[in-house]
Length: 457
Image (cartoon, rainbow, N blue to C red; front, side, top):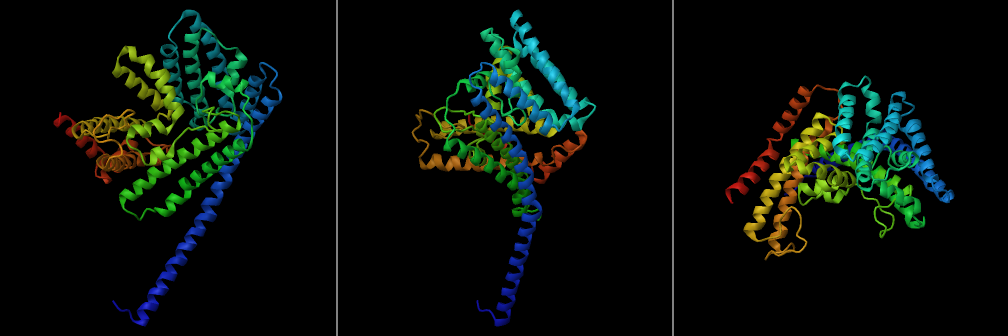
């Protein structure tokens, strides 16, 4: 097709205006969103890292004392929580008597040989529900909620370990474990054994350690910018409803990666590592396994590895003697409480559970019919005639990955408005509207999976 000189010139001018407007938009996003985000988040991460580096350095200097590490962890943890994270909130002081009372409770539980999760679990659930829905100052509670939840996870896990070993740690050890600055606010949960192992760790703090801290901290800032600015700039509200939903879900996931990588930087800066054989790593979330997952089971496992380990190790087995359904229900309730206990979170977790069940049944049935390695988890010792690298298995797993990404978008877009002060009715109506706009595609996929698995038996 031939263009006249005038039309060609008009087209060049239109392109120039378009690129000029795009460049102006980019500069506005950079100036008014990206730079402020970097400044705020870098200050937040820097203050956290300074406390963790101080903990690491002081424990190295005073390594000769048996209880020095616990005293340093307690002092620095309290300084960080009340001096920076909670900014002197007096309401948060109720956490201190909670810690002291829980230590006393450990002695009583140990003396009476009572199952800790059965006693402590309901008490902590009552405290969380009261603070979440009936507390006098919701703003103060939102500030200290993560501190309380991390402390409760540590107390529950320690109580279960004490029940087995019959050895209650001293009050100083107990406080050091709970107030350790590396994970007192952002997490992650770690066991008391992992915390104590830090006291006799002789790992050298060299170039690999410095690089690991910088890498985790830098990645956290990148994820914060992607969540707040870049995703919204690249995928604005003028796009298709599915694209907008994908952006909303992506922003939520990016904000989670920001917290996870900042927490990883803090743990490594404080001298912790999740694998003694690897050079200074601490994996909390695995973005690659979440963004391109083989199944929803992979997302659940890799979303927060320490929390998943906590639930699998201490909550699920403790309730399993009362029945599989009871164990699943209590684990779901515990997970919901540990993730904020909002209506959106509860709906998302419940929906993920249902979708994951449907996906598991469907892929198990397909694997059986095709004799192909396409289950939700790859076979360790695959005996299928068509292995995981076969063309059919690769094609099927690619389709399952695509369907999982659709389900993640369908569920994740609900988390866009979490934290807003609304009634439960308004939240449920909003969820219904969101899913109606997406034509209920997630539920249609789940119904198809369950129906196929049932019909093809």
